[in-house]
Length: 247
Ligand code: PGA
Image (cartoon, protein in one colour):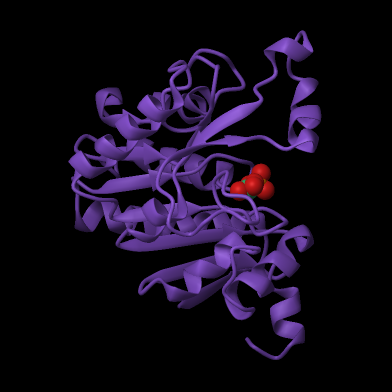
């Protein structure tokens, strides 16, 4: 495991973007595992900036995203497909046909998940998987208690997630109650993993994940067993690890 420290969000974004762009430069037809959430937004903006300067070429890149809400179409502004278009795909020369997100409109969960596993398999495997981390140690929608051996599966969103999302929708009926997510097994199969974390709200999860016992109660703790894990985090997220004298 290698840990890179950033001064702040901006610095973490730039360092993570450097690592991601090195991957694209070294392997122009790289398969990138991508993530949504507030953490990677700055990193995507940095990649877009470098692309616009002519320093990056996405024309041969393939991407597979971690997760998607079941029931949302890609043009719903709450969908993760929409997020990816807005934050990255619409601004670089990636071939959209080679950008994959689980199909939120497929109602048959088994079919949607089997299809997504097949898509990942057909890419030949993820070269670099980007991850954020939840305050409870979740990765993708793999919440505490998720089995390590799962591939893409359908998860029931927690009551608190459903409630938190309700403000973005006209009615409660429209709020997604389930999501499709890559499982821990898919994530661990990536050749390299790039984990980003910023802010004190992630300090405990980061400490538990990187230095605590490996347990499904802290889904990201499995990353300790990954042979090529890079962590980019700011001082706030690393504060507990520093306090314990581990860094
Ligand atoms: P965040 O989410 O980037 O919005 O903090 C990370 C996650 O929950 O995986």
